[in-house]
Amino acid sequence: MSGGRVRVLRPEELGERERERWRELRAAADAPRSPFMEPEFAVAVGRVRPPARVAVLYEGAEPAGFLPYERGPLGQGRAIGLGVSDCQGAVLGPGTAPETGGLLRACSVSSFAFDNLEAGQDLFVPHAAEEHATYVIDVEKGYETYESVLRTQSPKFLKTTLAKERRLDRRAGPVRFVFDERDPAALRALMEWKSAQYRRTGRQDRFAREWIARLVGRLAETRAPQCTGTLSVLYAGGRPVAAHFGLRSASVLACWFPAYDPEFAKYSPGLVLHLRMAEAAAAEGIGLLDLGRGPAEYKDALKTGELAVYEGAVTRPGVGAALHWLSREPVRRAHGFVRARPRLASLASRTLKGAARLRRP
Image 1: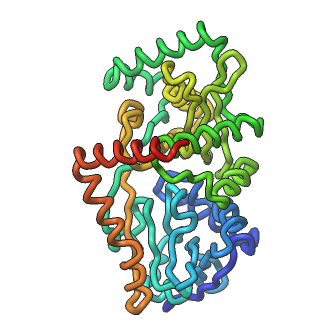
Image 2: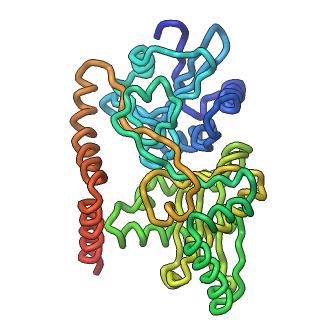
Image 3: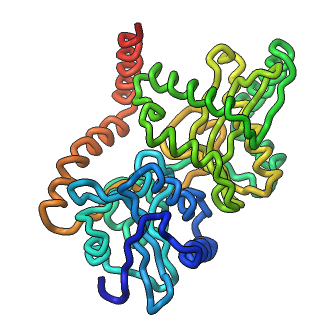
């Protein structure tokens, strides 16, 4: 790559000097400080994904940028943690603008695929094939202000959810919320609920993939200031009824794996949980909850705004680029075709659920 040296390391091989420089660059960036873009997330992925790498870009002797990625067996590259990471891209210092082809060569990859590229990634956004919305809750001005927004934009939703919380308290026992629960049993319950939800809706069970389950376990023990694994649990009568595992920085709570006990579905414990998470996050000084991309009714009710994320890939000429296109583009385009047609998307969802019911014994 012209203009500087590139050194490729496994994430765990990063020295404290490189990690601290990475943190400094993220702190100086205009983008929300997503915990997915911190070195601790890359290191955690590296522990469970052997192909994980970090390209360190140097200007002279000083690190000037970082690109966390994974290299496939045929040389295709992808954002680190692709499939579970909700924020992706390079971490670059001011004025650091490598040529993409040279960077890919230095990484020994023919492509770099992404599906949640953050806005402002000038190196890769021009290569995006699609733009998506990620839904956010702004609690910068405090929870009371957020609740007043809900009273205006979703008055029925707020009134109904708070009423269900009171009813849950009366009928199932005292409702209690813990923002940062450390009980491993609660995390196991969440993963079981989420696996059952995936199967019930006909979707691939992420926790059936060993590396994802191991990654969540590692991140649950990560307590770095800008990347802390956070398990939030709603209890009723001493029993967990809804839970969420995500990551938080000092300013962003990345909402990742929410689920609830179907036995309590009539009380909407997942919605109650999200309101209490917003309240607790605001009390901690966190200004933004990122609900992730993909439409959902609960996101429409809870959100205060949207941010752009991008899907696509940058490639360099050669066989590898053709392999990337053949392996990803037809599927991506098919998904895009369905998403753009609500009636077709609804039919696809019903079909998945029906297939899941047939598979159940």
